[in-house]
Length: 101
Image: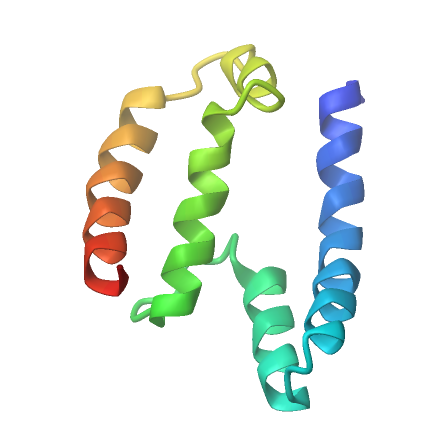
């Protein structure tokens, strides 16, 4: 396992707990925290009719692949289709952000 793969595996385990801690500190109610945890835990499984919060997280997760930390991992994968990622994510992400901003 590469260091990038190990980091992704660790973040998958830790992110729901980190989000819970932050949201509790911010005073969010239990049902909201549970919804966020559910979205975090299922954002790799794209539902047919995702909620707006799900789409924001899903698209953010795809956009982070372009970050300096994650780009080398994905770019080194044989056959990784950057064009597919770009056409799937970018237009939809821009549309979502235009509706909520």
